Length: 214
Picture 1 (cartoon, helix red, strand yellow):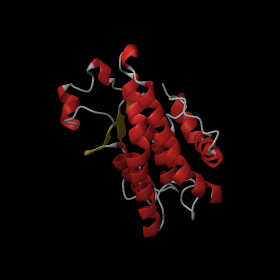
Picture 2 (picture 1 turned 90 degrees about the vertical axis):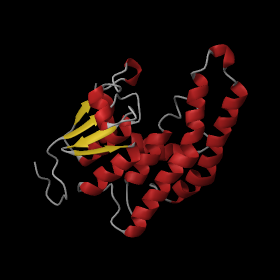
Picture 3 (picture 1 turned 60 degrees about the vertical axis):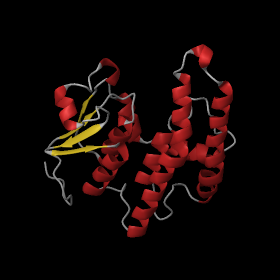
């Protein structure tokens, strides 16, 4: 099926990975763009990403992996950029400055917001008697610090991260990283602008459709 105005044909989009992973970032992007796709819910904990067939696609044996006909791509944010820039929709900025700001926000999410969240997750996987709550509290403080310094001011001035557009891939990428805040019991009660922005992002129909998928 050809999408009018697109530089690519949809034909077959497949995303490998179960929903309990970063694959939801890519599924959200495809739902926002209204793209037909197949999700192959591989569970890495059961060795499903270590088969010869999958390793031929992704030698690291990690998820997600996107396959678009004969084109193979890994890493969630690269996949999202490919999808949003290849298919028509409002996610991709229309100016070079907007694209640069999108890249800035994506880099910030991965370099500043995600590391303490990953650290909290890894600490929580340790045997209960070995978990260091002081370390967890420190990472919680790091999250609050970066949210208060960066997200709160800009979201107090505008509803979404890119000033000249509505909801964009910048919001999707950052919100998808921040989606685990409730899981780690990190409250946004002291960050009202960010809290309202998160609610706007996760009330979207595309996110609801992702959550409804098996």
